[in-house]
Length: 185
Image (cartoon, rainbow, N blue to C red; front, side, top):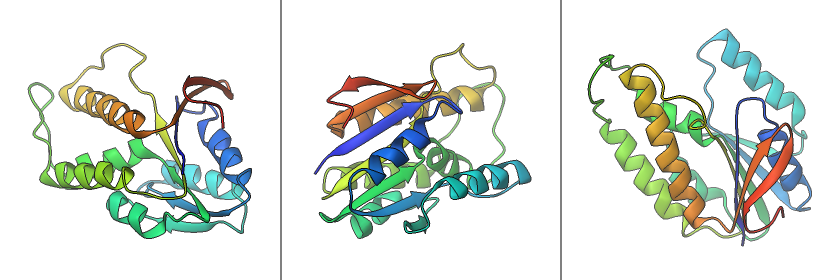
């Protein structure tokens, strides 16, 4: 069993790289998608990703209960690919449609705490091959506005927690992987 975290910026090639890793395993691939098509731009992004994936892969759409999905779908004879953790994080933080202040602390929803804990626990219990895709959003300036800073902070904390449990961690830039931990698989 190997857990691999693939990090990168927007349009860095991280998803394509992760998909190639999954395909090269020669096992059944379960693709867990966390995105939700709540506007036309996101719908177009989802369609683009769908067109890139082999039709033989099983698609599981899970925007919130990612820990439960891991426990259900991970198995020794499978590769599970999750794309992506930062969209899942956004779903957890903003699913309740709460209005947040531009200044001050952002109260994190109970759903966030519950699902994050369940996911990190499940991550330690999975069998089979697991590939996780996440955005590295902390390489730029500190964002303006409390909501943006909260999201960047929580994405960074999530990536650190996941990386701790992964045998391989890669950063993809310009379509090229840089090994941060383990190997390039």
